[in-house]
Length: 204
Length: 204
DNA sequence: GTGGTTTAGTAATGGCCATTATGAAAAAGG
DNA sequence: CCTTTTTCATAATGGCCATTACTAAACCAC
Image (tube, rainbow over all chains, first blue to last red; front, side, top):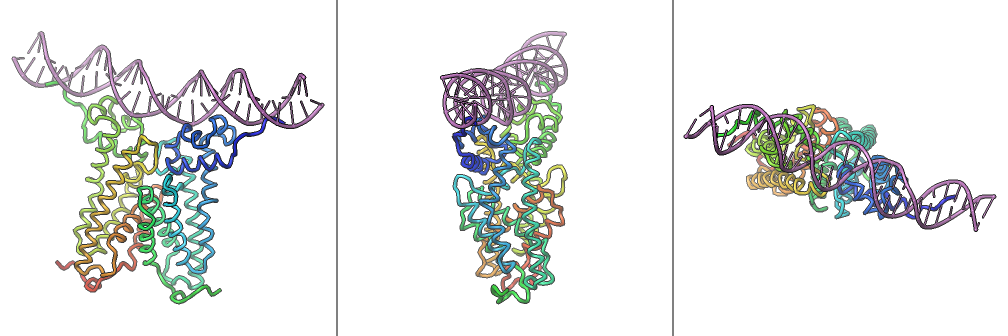
């Protein structure tokens, strides 16, 4: 019973996601958000709660819809392919939409006022979760001989994440996809090779 | 003639620099700035103009006082030493002060409201200037045979900057200096070598 | 000492911010 | 049709923001 909602909540969330992606958490005002969503202020509040809750929903959606290349990458057969897939996918994503370049997980809040601290921490946690998955994947690769015994999975995971973050910063500064791919290529040229990996293909 | 200034302008600038380093341009309020500087609002305005001008002064001082390892690095004899000096110095700087980790040049404004656009662009320009110097240094290294003929100076410069930016993001997330140095070490592994460089030391 | 000039500190000013009260409109149940 | 419930839209609310009048104090020249 009662009146039906007249706007699409998913579409409003997508619109808010794009605004946050472009302006970050604190840089995005409700004026920006309501204009992008085509919805009045109280509608956003009733649908999502407050600004922080809206951002968290947008962040979750971002990981689902745009960072899906990470679970994809983790399933590739070699550690090098995992890293390559992540770096090239990041280069593509961070330059795909001219209106919101870079990465929401970094543009969101890097530094800000004390009020933004919980959101900043949420982004840190999200990135740390990805890095943990990557480290565990590299540990498995080491156990499988795909990475040499001297390889440090935690350093490799942090390195891949650092390059990805750096490319996100550069994308936000206007770097083209080609330039980011050159960075990715350079990053991968330093990749360690294990005894099995030089000619190894997708053998089980 | 007239009353003397009772506060040290340099010290006030240093205090503002630290606040901007920690909270970024938009996240820092005049309440924060005046408290840190120990100076009332109108004093900051009369000494520096408005907030944007104060930030630009702080940014200039940051490059002079904290990013001095870049001109240092450019004078080192080999491209690898240049890159290593930059990456290890960045790892140290970005974790040296627990109260303001990361890099002012990135924390300042990555994404923000439209009002912050001029400041954001100033940071982009500053980073681009550093990257240009680095590319030119690598071009020289290539001409000198220190880097192989297949090396791409622009890609190498962008890569070193990307790793540095990524470490800044990680530092702001709380990464230790050790972890950042592991990232730097990974970035430097298998640095491209030219015919002369394998055993070259600091020869003129 | 006095006049002119610059700084210091208090307290405003107008604007934008996130959030919400209020009441009209619309849908469903009886 | 009428009541109940939910959504919609306008417009308000209080707070913080950058910026600045304004007044008192300190200093220099004379």
